[in-house]
Image 1 (cartoon, rainbow, N blue to C red):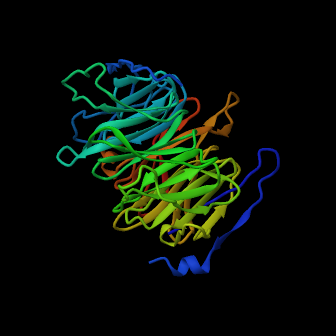
Image 2 (image 1 turned 90 degrees about the vertical axis):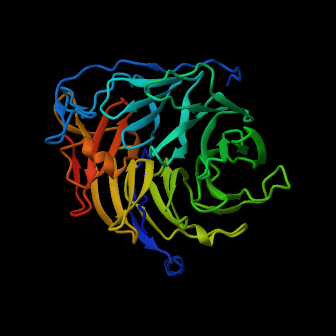
Image 3 (image 1 turned 60 degrees about the horizontal axis):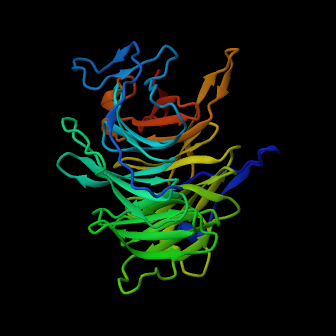
Length: 412
């Protein structure tokens, strides 16, 4: 597996660092707490011209092109987008200031779930195997409350005030993770706390408070009873949920991750490897989670430090033919590494300035869509991985990574 990391100072010129592979690691690769009533309402989105669809296909959920060339014009994105996540092959969640919005790709309306403060993160839970879609979504809010909403069917209205609230944090909640069965939810925030919730009773069952542990990102490790957490204290930690005899977590496994904290992380499907994206200095690192211990630090399998701005997203793309690590930095540099660390392809997300010159977009977040979503985007090569980025100016861009020639294709 491979990952890329870049370090850069906002004042000085970035230093280029060599990609290094650790031999030993390589060898072992095998603010308000009122319960408020919310409503989900349909919000109209600006109508635009230009409809694209596959040949001989009915208008399913067409992607609409704006005059500026954006593949999907969402006037409803009227504030900074903190995070994007996928519900299914056709629906996406946008975490924004005081609201969570769920859009159908290319659609003109959305479901809107108001919050009293900024929504930092949203996690789909309760996956339905029949519909191949998540039935609920958990949100992490700046008011310190975690909320769980049931996503209504298109034909049934949202029941006002039906959301579940989990109250235990004292400061902003920044991330969360759930086990595959959605029986447990782990949450973390800027109050140094890590909390575990039983989603059958909606009660807190475990807690941990570690000095300076301001949580930035969390993921459940597939096939285990453990979850991974990144923090501004420059550590990765693995928490074990199996001991039911105590109200506090046992000492987690941990490792120092360098001189720049991990803003984002992802884990492979087998639970063996983790990729971290670092900020404010650019860095993407690959870690072998099987090597983590309670007291000893480990070295990354490999690192890549070759960009100027912090990383906003890192994802694994695993399929039967190719395995890649996809990363995106704040200045719009997207890279695809193989699991050996080599850069297979790269793409710069740019826009025209007032003089018509190409300049980098300031990217806020990136999401990978299921390959099956490709049918919504007829201009992408077949079997491409659809990738959507959102800039700080709420401009969406779609492009695809073709697994055959390893080239990025921009939808335009």
